[in-house]
Image 1 (cartoon, rainbow, N blue to C red):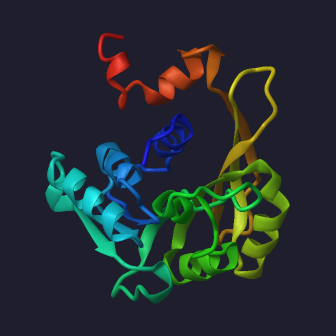
Image 2: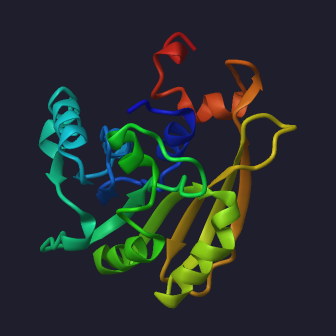
Length: 219
């Protein structure tokens, strides 16, 4: 599967201060786990449903400088039962359920919510998070009310919302959501505009991505 800029911005904006344990639900290539470790997380567990993606994920982990801090579990998150809870639960889940489905089975599984609904995702997150943990999601902006309503049923409050626009004149399509169990935090909202023009990153998105893309290696 291709790694898109939105996913990279999501990974670059994760609330990693240093030393956290991370679980990545629907890890795909493992890119989010790798970015979390690069930022200073102590350990990341990637859970991936499809054997092909899990194999790629393991290979990427083994080829990274942090192989001993990463592991990939093949299976569905609904039946995953670890012995610990995690400081950060991160997921870029399937969300293109209102669009025409791909004819490619692997892409269809990766991009649609047939195998993991929002409710199932939140049930898993609630069971996996520490009391002071943060749930980080990348979702379509139009799902804001739906995901916030479901999260509230599990005692999770939206603490931070980062909206993503392709260009300044574009509509908001995606957003980064941070949820926690705290009930006394004020919602923090911000926005990232990705491009100034075709294939030209804004100074803002360049700031987020400079440590991860080789195109910025001389900057």
